[in-house]
Length: 639
Image 1 (cartoon, one colour):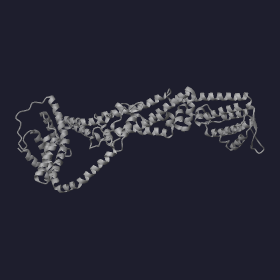
Image 2 (cartoon, rainbow, N blue to C red):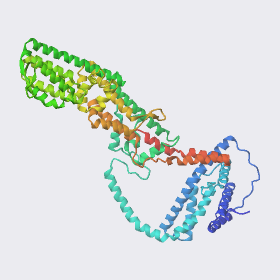
Image 3 (cartoon, one colour):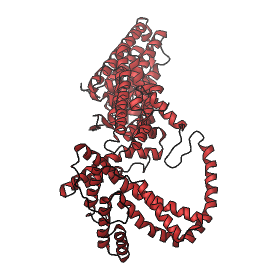
């Protein structure tokens, strides 16, 4: 019977000869040899067991499965890394000692590689564990050469021993170049490192210096990180505790965000990160609802809002009309409306507008009424000449202009304003104080309800019909979204001075504005695991910036509440986005877990049951405490 050393030598010879099949068979034999001779002196022949072991209990099998999982995980990852690290450590030691290239140095490098591999490979301590590792080793020996073979700890160390001489031989040949390179590069690297430290220190004195993936204890947050957290915590519904910003969200650090976004994809380990974002989405919704409630709305349906706006405008217009009638009646009773006035400005205006009579029907109608009242006349040449009429008749003519003009039609409204301006110019310096007061009241009404196209449309009808110029359900859109900010502000002034109904109407419009922003930002068809609609930072920022750019954000909500909306838009970018490249859209973060789950399915096609159990244990073991600790650190609120 062959010894283990003879098999190892045969494997070396087969590998040197390029005989892949023989090398694979010898490797499998060595793996089986090692698994069945654990604890024996290397090189001794295998002695068959004399007694049959007792059937392991259920508890022993469970312990064995766990040990097999540790052996597989540490052998596949730690053993390989340990071998590489041990080899490099041995090479470095021999180069620095000056003995590199000698047979003694090669032996020391081989020993260092073997120690490194074994140091990072777990060795089963129970019989059940060794049996399950043996079963896995045998099963995996049949896998194709492209699949890494995971055997018993002895096999890993044996592989390290076999590989180490080859690594050492290659390194020996390169020793002179390595030594020269080390001497040449060492001094500049040391100098550059020292310079880098000096540059980093004054640049970020508030942060601890990072070394690899570790961070010193007590690293202070940057000002921008503290500012983002402060903004988040001062929202109407604060982002705190279970909805607080994560470390990556607050700092916007590329590496930290990359870790958080990728870790969130892991099935169980990433659950706390996913729950944090779900909580933050819920807080976003609560903030919008809080702003809607703060406006104090009563009506939320667009049609109901349109009705309350219309009622407030109509009521105020009626109050103003009654005030005008009283003022003119007082001037009439005092005899001030009997004073004659010459309508020269009116005649000139109507004569100039004659060429537009076919475009705007109110021009011809006003001209006929002016001739009937005697304000103008046509001479022998067909031109209009001014006549004298009383102030009372001039007011009658003015009222006719308002009735004959469709103020919702832009062309008719333009010509109607020109005609009324000509009448006002003719009567400007006439009458007494009561008449002047009445005229002032009438001018205020005109500025508020007639010269503002939006208000006129809100109160007006289409042509000579009873159909509203603006439907009730379109009132919010016309006032807040479509009209220029100047006209919106005039409507706002009219409403908030129209008594309780007007103030309530404006509150309803403000609340609907927040609801419009909310609807634009949140998806109506997509939800997260908690049932919250998904928020789009791009859409939220777009709608907020659009209203802000036109000046409507502050006109609607004032400076303080407008800033809250800006901050919410900014926070959505902080929470839901990451710098380019930080998120791996191919989902390779969970590749190891998926691969292990896939390998486990081979149990249905011949992989021994203990191997399936072990691989599942490896998958669970990969979600280690260090990853969970780092996730907890990312979720922790700073003191």
